[in-house]
Length: 535
Image (cartoon, rainbow, N blue to C red):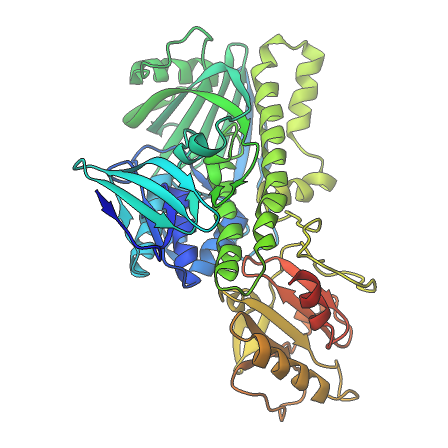
């Protein structure tokens, strides 16, 4: 039995999407990290199929979104059928993001790209390695690991993060319970090629007297088939391709031909939420903390955002740049998201399952409800793509004054805009790829003002907090403005950035490493008040 030193890295348990993001983000923030997974390799089975706009923005900050986009299929619309009759199609309106549409991509492909990125950071998933026990003290965790060759290892680590899925060992060893309920219907899953009259960028939803059927998009012309089946179905046995073919033909009313199955399975949907996301020096993220229906494709995306929320906070606390209380904001901010996802997906799933029991009038109401009125359509799209998440209730998101007519408030996601950097066209979001907080100080909007106050404020922040805050000034007119090398000057010649952020003259925005606004003010000298409040 081997024992590591007390200076061991953070231990991430689980090497799927959430764990890979967690480890990569910790490494990007210069935190030593070790990641283990009990499986021998990436699971080839397609359990998650969709990357939403907000997740794509996160992958952009990691520098790997181009690899994702190159092999994914944009979701362009959703078509609805009732007992084989076409009832309408809803276009996927582009949302306000550099990545305006969801992308269909098998989870295994996403994880392959993520793992390659993690390896480039010098971190490698230790496969066929499982956690067997945990013992916590005030300042460390002792974790027992079992390797594939039978070797046992005791690890001393400052933190353990459970990203090990719905059957999480970390959760079992800490929380013990996983409250919630199972959906009454078993479900069938199939990753297949479907030949027939299907638009490659559309998802299809078939309501039928015998149950619902979903055909989600993947890449390379493949489809992910999801359908509920009889309650008495033995889910321990996988369906055959012939059984899936029969169900698809019957419920769709179309002459589709299924072939090349990569995965056929049965499973049960569960709606569960861990009592706590933190237990001492252990955390839960992704499916280890919450599970729900796969309708909407929110599971993997929610896990990605859990990891992105926690990693930078843990890094700041470990470097003593932020108080330990910041770690409690992880659950404050992310639990409300999980609660909403569980409630939303449960309602949508139950409505589809109960279709056969509805009266004709109630069926028409359900169908009408699936086509959102034009006035509500963009609001719904923003929620679907998870770009409307709001952490304004978090104690580290502060707005001490009124006066901003518009622009993202503290707790809201930062918005993008074209800018100039060193005279070259650039996107505002490119600056947010920094692992640091980003402070933007806006110079006076015209020659009538002086930029001396702005440069003094910028250089003071860079001097005192430059190791965790990247400082930028937005100075549109004074080309003679001189700033120190640790301050970046950007230009907003079309005033688009000012307009989007509600800046009429001077002002500041502090944006967190996860792309959400932490603080804003019209005063250039007020950052110290914010820091005194939260630190």
